[in-house]
Every structure is written in structure tokens, then in C-alpha cells.
Length: 176
Image 1 (tube, rainbow, N blue to C red):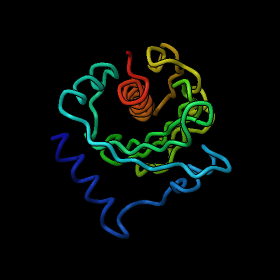
Image 2 (cartoon, rainbow, N blue to C red):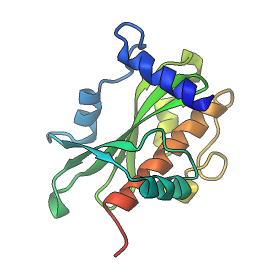
Image 3 (cartoon, helix red, strand yellow):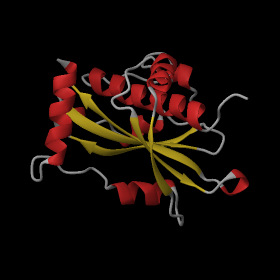
């Protein structure tokens, strides 16, 4: 049933006029994440083994094996990376851009799209509480405050951040 809902949510995004208004465009989010820079966009298809590793490390299901990431520079020139994550909250899609610093720590989390009822939109002040926390603290009630009435939104957002951290660890900061 989850697959049907996810497929329907993705299909709705592809139909002009049916997707809700964007909270922030991808271009605006990238300009905020990487001021004065133009990040390179890469789409990476994870293998089934990589998907399993990400899901285990993030303690959440990956919405898709296709990962969209953005990167500016390498080494000392890097301003870090960002990962798009579109997932379903209740029955409607949400898209977050998780921006990581060059060292892999969470620098910011930006909301690009939220299709559910406006009462459940995660406030920017709450999204800021995700910054700087390692994956093990990206759990509501353990390192991230809960938001009364928005439990599913909070759970989905923290899972998206944990997925970005796990993907980054796998693709960029692999242990040698």
C-alpha cells in the first residue's frame, strides 16, 4: 500500500497543475545553500546493496534508489554537498534539501515542497534544530524536539536527514 501511495504522490508531481505550490524553488534553495556558487547536479543510481546499507544506517526506507545530489568544488574549495529527498508524509509529498558541510555535518535543512495541510508545515525554526547534529541525534525526542500535532512530519524530516547523512557517508566520505 505504501508503494501505491508513493507512486501516486510521484505521479501527482508529474502532472501539471496537480502539484501544490512550492515553498521554495530548487534554484532559490541552492542559492541559499551555496551563495555565489553554482553547484554541480548529479543523479546517482544506488545498487540494491547500497540501498540496504543506507536504509540500515538511516533506520528508514529510501524513497528511491535514484539520488539527486549537488556539490560545489572539491577539497578545500568545497562548500559541501546537498541532497534532495522527496518522500510521503501521511499521503502527500514533501521535499527537503539537506545541506552538508564539507566535513559531512548538517549545515542546513530547507523545505522545498509540502503538499499536506499547512498546519503541518515544519517551521524553519524547527528545521534549524537539525543543524550540526550527527545521525544518532536526528531522532525526535532524542536530539531533536518533537512538534505537537506534527509527529509524522517531524519523523519524516528527521528520517530524510538521516538518509542524507548515510548517503553522504557511503558515496563521499567512505571509510578507507
